[in-house]
Length: 356
Image (cartoon, rainbow, N blue to C red; front, side):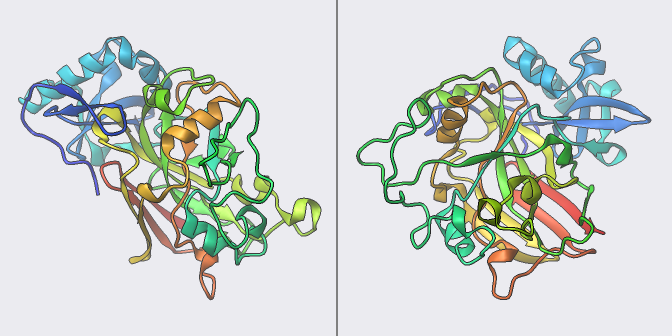
């Protein structure tokens, strides 16, 4: 379901949310995306899920791309966007407004410098995957989400408290070359027959983040989008590293549908309580809430930033709830002609078809 937009001009008041992030109350809401029209690419402001304000055309040719928008957002660009949205809502600013249906939607970030994904971050997803031989080594056995025997802190990366019974976070890199847009087609790799879906909330980083705490993490987040972490469950054909290969499993071309847009964090009251739904050919396959994550979005930013410096426009896909195809009996794998729709309430719906 898309974000509900306010059609009238209103006073923007920032209040503290449960997550410790300022949330806009009474402000006209918007999303941010990257578009193409007649060969020209531009970043735009999406209002009412139907109109797009060409931000560069209305702002002296800047920003050039989404990363520049993110970098400038807290240096006055947020206020300029709010003014443009307010003017459009009053019937002004028509010269720079396009109908969304007349534009080609591109990935909102082309392309993230770093794409990180969190593995098995919902207990029930871990439970379903523990029955899949090719990936069972990542699930923790009989009690997914629980710390395995011998679990210790990872000094300088993840310090455990005595009361923390969860396993440590686990992340992997996904190639940004796999990114495609909403509406583009996921292509089945030649000879690979066990291709699966994973509908995930994605965090977009807003400023350089190095060694931040979970309490600080919200201030380093720019906003939220959606990633379908398409996955190849077919393995690598040998027993090296237990037969597991994250490159083969995650980074085929077209395996990272991203978008359709970015919702700035001020319009997401609490990313730890967002409903999710994945529909395949009209049938609901995944349904849940980010409240069931093992490590929440702020802890994931903490963990990642203690390994590498995160930069504006970097993306962290935060894990998927249960209901993936490989965890079903019998398994259901993607095939040519399938239609996928991944929805996070208040963030949007990411739609992609499947082809050979």
